Amino acid sequence: MDRRRRRTGALTLILVAGAWAAMAADPGPPLRAMRWMSPEANLRNALSETPTECLRPPQAPRAAQAVRIGRAAFRTPLLLGGQAARAGLTCESCHRAGRGNPDFQFPGASGAPGTADVTLSLFSSHRGNGVHDPRPIPDLSGTRTALKVAPKELPDFIRGLIVEEFDGPEPPAAVLEGLVAYVSALDPAACPHAPSTPVTLATTMADARLAVAAAGTALAEGDPSTANLMIAAARAQLGLIDERYAAFPDDRARLRRADADLASLQAAIRERRPDAAAQLAGSTGGLTALETRLARREPASLFNPEQLARAANRRLPPRAS
Amino acid sequence: MSLYKSLLIAGLIAGLSTASALAAGGGGGGVGGGGEMPSASAPRYDPAEEYAKAVKALQARDYKTAARAAGNVTTAAPKNLDGWRLLGIAQAGAENWKGARRAYERAVKLAPDDLPSRGGLALSLANLKDPKAQAELDWLKARSGSCGAGCDPAMLKAMTADVERAMAGAAPGPRASRTSDALIFASDRGDHAYGAAVSLINERRYDEALASLEKARLAFGPHPDVLTYQGYTWRKLGELEKAEAYYRQALAIAPNHLGATEYYGELKVERGDLAGARLMLAKLDLNCAFACAEAEELRRWIDAGGEPGR
Image 1: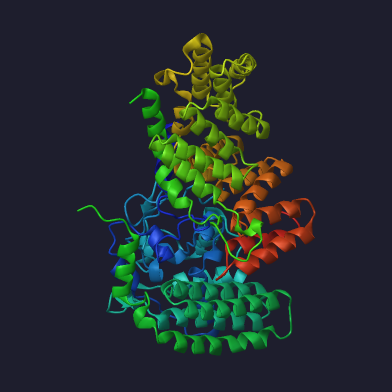
Image 2: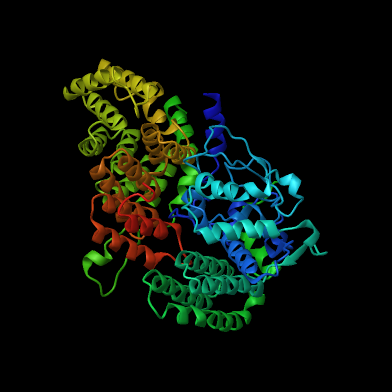
């Protein structure tokens, strides 16, 4: 009984934080990620910058493609299932740029900032243990020994996270292989000198293009499932841009048209239409043109830290002194 | 301030802030006008928003406003139990027992076993000195012997006591002794109840999930998210018709609700209505910007012809 009380008590604030993205409700904070940020976090800094990625990309083309796939999947809500995917969570929500996230505090799923309960019935129909036991989110770019997962156990471990911890669908083999490759390519020795780097339109759009490129390669290799997840990853990146352009309906309309084009591309791939590969090849150029168009207003968008700070302060309740 | 009012207000505070926050996007409209057919310019209400208004008015002990807002809920969602029940509570607060009786009668017609509605009806009849109160009191007493899943024994006991007091001649008060309405709202916080329900569903504890969702409904009223999960839970219990009714209620309030559309589509797959499921998927594909889990999950159901992986 006590166990249940503790767990349900911890869930009390879930909706207050608006983590239920599907709720027909208050539009919520300007950026979705704010829903799972600690109230104590400096939102301006936390969401205008991201930790630098400690990635050591492999040289071999096949291995490099695997890392590209894993990196894109890592940033895609659709990799996960159930409530996490519906709330917009990705692996990257907890492990920003493959590191940790000291500001992560999903109400009901976290304790102190930077912690998460990975055995929570709210997200999982498999691993709920009835106890609110959040643990520190590890830095995936830290030392291997700190991660407590042996390299040979990584595929099963990651699959378990997706399928059991988050009730996600079985990932395509290439996606699981890619996630293993990506996580394995994170290396503390590869960390850039600067601890963080700005989040910009260019970096976000670059991620979208990389995902589209990974989709193209997957499609060429006869793997439509992976190709479609990669396109979903690109669409997710467009969504991240869209929310930072909320003040500009015409730019948002452009983003939504680009998104609709990618959705139509997914349909073409599912239906095995012969023109799918050609459509896909044209997508990268389309995204570059879109970026050029959007760049004009980037200084006035929420990619600008000052604009973001103003928007965040408008939306958030006053902090206790 | 009477104890009754204090309890009622304390109970309402629990769900109020979240209820207001949740009410904004449910649909609704406003008053149109100019060059439209009368039906197009008639007032349209967002039932969840009006529900929140009614709860807020009850908190302020403004029973007339509460009754008006609750009446708007019943106008917007006439087949939804919550609005009629809330209207009954508002009318009872205003000691308009005839109005309360009418509202509770509609609620009981929609949900014959709904404890708060049966208790409210019994109390209204007792205060009106209507002999039918005895039959309602008998129903409450009979229920005490079978107060199982979804039945709150404390609420049942308090209601029975309230009705007995009213029948004994204490009507129309004293309010200080009436505790049942407060218990209806104080039973739990709506947001807490909703989050707990989702976890209970994942643990396949469906009866408990339904009880928790009932509590959420008391706080939020006819909120599409709550209705959707009620439908989902009934579906998991194999009650497809009940499930469908909840999904349809959710979609009547919020026609583009992603969760309700997805789950209604899954229900159609379970019934073998793949064409119907595909229509739901087409709607999701139209409404899902930047890819959404709801569409992909329904797509997997359709591709598998049932629950994926089973």
